[in-house]
Length: 155
Image (cartoon, rainbow, N blue to C red; front, side):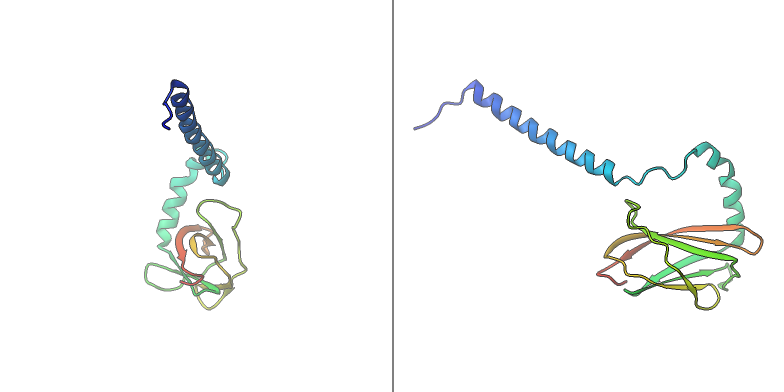
């Protein structure tokens, strides 16, 4: 026995299809908003007033940060334009996911000679950002973000 396709059936099919689409969109929007880390600065205009000045001072240092991860320890090295390790007055680094801040950690680094800093750290596989901060002897702030990927707990 074949059932006849009536207007009521077509209406139900159409409403069901749109209901599924709307439900999926709402779930995706909720997940996107829930994972957004928020603002980087409270007032972007005020932050922009010092940005060029700070960037020029940092570029004059000629420093570069490099990171390595062996599955249980993170190593960050800072070198100047000649490849030497500069003198740092202060050093810290925050490691976290690019998509949210709930996994952010700021390990206690130990200086391992020159501009090399080590800290024990266990990272889950995936993408991680490393925000390095240091201060030069003349008081110039050095900041660099390093994108890093930990594969199967080791890199």
